[in-house]
Image 1 (cartoon, rainbow, N blue to C red):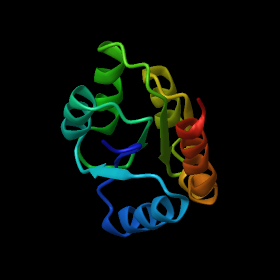
Image 2 (cartoon, rainbow, N blue to C red; image 1 turned 45 degrees about the horizontal axis):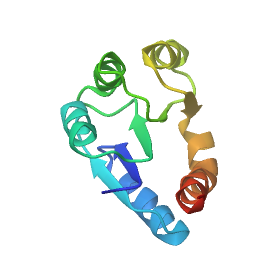
Image 3 (tube, one colour; image 1 turned 60 degrees about the horizontal axis):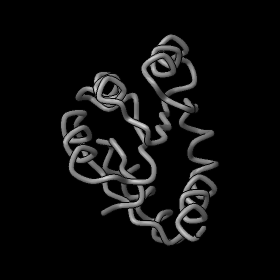
Length: 122
């Protein structure tokens, strides 16, 4: 079971996320489609879900499906800073936080550390 599940189809960004997760000490599982994200969550419970809203196959729909299924896991989405309408849609679909990709990248290690800290609390 992964600590963090991420819907990301950009291979370079996947590598950056994997390296950051490894450095912090959390396990990361990436999927490339919204359907794969929903399937993974239904069979395993990560501590955090990350969604690249610019992924090509169903990121917003996956968030909506998770919400409809009663998802209680935290969801953080990221996107281009100019996509304000998509950011609003993601918030309405159930994301706890929607960040510009640059801010997400800058805060990624801290986000992973928060997951790690929740793991060690009794």
